[in-house]
Length: 132
Image (cartoon, rainbow, N blue to C red; front, side):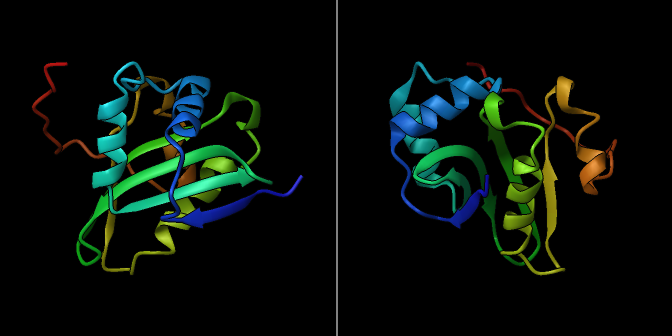
């Protein structure tokens, strides 16, 4: 099966919720207005499709000149281990110049995945956690 990838196309909220809930990523899918705002405020969204079915999402925020924060990488479990996540990241990277760093925070279970895609582990990051 061939998958296709798109940049910054409108996504139906129900499709986003289905991918999040079916991927294993933990996002506040019970709070639909918050999910909608997350996508409205992101300025770089790559999506993966099997025909007209959304199967994966990479949601990012970037200034297109220095850094890009990859906030979400979610692929429906049925499509994982088929290169979809790798291609979503490549699709995001194709929108950025070599002057832009791609940065992400990994879920503990995914720590072994990202080095396979060219990411390096960094120890000089800080976060103020969200309250909910």
